[in-house]
Image (cartoon, rainbow, N blue to C red; front, side, top):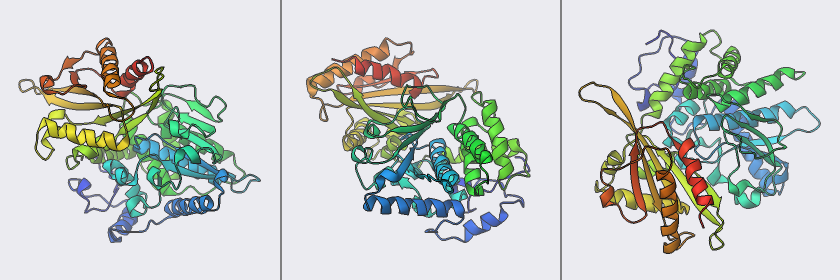
Length: 453
């Protein structure tokens, strides 16, 4: 363990129980403040106060019919630390960089994750607590707190900014796309957006932070950058880049991390020490999922949207993906009856609740070879099609067949799961030993759905 240690949370938290006692450092006062706070503490510092005040102002303006003044900065619905941080950072920048101009912008970060699902990512809670935000995430605007349906609200607001997200969800299609920042594939959305940046980086927060600092340094006078936000930005970059050591790490991730560090309370620390420590602590928190139920695991990293089809009877279907870091067998052990039927009953209740026609569960885990001790990465792909949302039984049978055949005809090395014979109609589970995750599998399935008749 390095001599340098960042104290990210109150020391009594279970997430850090095994951590080595921290040495004296610049975060000592922050740690004392956190330790003295109650369970229902109010956030402290400029970043928390700004976030809470912005949320209040947005709701007041909505009540007064002034939605048209607002820009919503939206990440993806998976709600990971990168997506959340990028949205918060850019909303803060939009407001503060224009506050002394002739056209000040009202902007707020919208987390497209329900409030009660935020803590299903323990690394988010850890990072937000370190940033001294109010407990219960009361400082943040989440999708379930919107006072109006997104389809309606999208046509009233000034527009949206997409971060860590290449294309808006269907429910936001009525909004003008003002800017896009993404580190994935350009899907062609928002051709007139400005800035419109697609760049391969480990973290989307790196792209947002660089643009933010570039514009900040060009202002006649810099606005205040709270250290809590700066440290949240470093946290997001660290966990997505494995402490700036992953193969996905780029020069852009490294250079902007240096610039952020210089402005933070950790400015006298070594960059790689800081990023390694952040990655260690956040990574440990991220893996602390044993207490989550099957329903929570399904909700924790869920992404989906409506997909158009050429079928005149069913022009759209709802498609959703969950990513879970446990095998299906281990998830079954988490159910009340520890049986296969119980897992599918929980899955069915969740997908019925959110109105999904096609659900895809992507499990990932490792198996240790008893002889060599080496670990092998195993992935599972669970496909289920319902017949009680937008499509009837005959349509569901047809759609299941089309998607199943598309996956089997792909380059994925799929093998039937060891209990596949026990599955019900329109349920199938495969295993495979490849690096194909959601980014590879989702386009295969979406293309099959789009071609379904």
